[in-house]
Length: 342
Ligand SMILES: [Zn+2]
Ligand SMILES: [Zn+2]
Image (cartoon, rainbow, N blue to C red; front, side):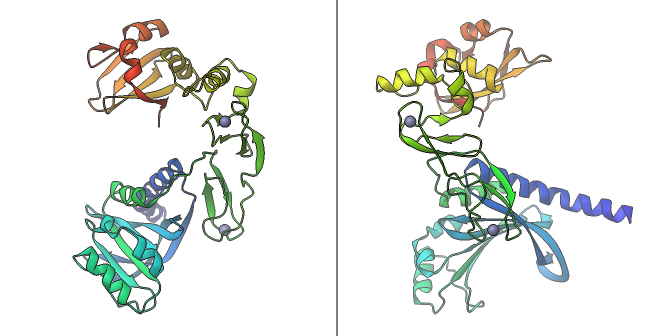
């Protein structure tokens, strides 16, 4: 029995890891989602369905308000780790860019007449087939070869919300384990309001616009982009999570009509607050992290080449850090996306 459990754990370990990575990916992109199990899955071996039914984990969410599910299979091979399903109605499927699926093994079929396939080599022809069909609901099925594939498909359909809140996890009355990041705070499965609905109103400390905050006081001003945080309100001159500049500096910049620019001093101050920062220069991301036993050393790393350099002090980093042979302090104006490590 112990051996069986051990084997089962091994079998499911990768599957759960994939599900977890999918959940984190959706979280980073503020797509509310639920973790679930699908119990009636018959395993495909050598391209044929077997009679064995296995439970497999899945992640449920919505893309453009359309129900979406990504399943992670236990029986995998180098071209298959699971499958993805999207459930659009006729109007929705006709409005979707189906080219997104063109490079993947996929099927488009009717929900009512399940045998009816609408796939064609040519996307325009597929749309004509769908238009002419008797079906009113459809399923787009796609085999997932690796996580990058499903990430790219999801990315091309998702709409990024304008506001960020802290992640909230809870069990909905419908029985699903839900992760929400967006402001509407509704269960993506049954639609019920979550106990973490972002309903608290607050005035933005920078520009005075009314905005929503979550139960932890986090949120984002839609007008000026300031990220709300309790600590920044208390320590007004310090760079405090989740903003890369201090509250007073942001106020000053806002009153001058300038964007919230992070200078090198702010960046290093933020580094000592978050431990991990990033910036982009000429299309390449650089990470800056506190490393070493006491985390006092500063490590600069080129994400493309993996090349790293270490600086012993703050001043050492500010004065001597180089990217592409140039001193960072001299090219700082040309860097973008100065932020905590994403
Ligand atoms: Zn629910
Ligand atoms: Zn504001």
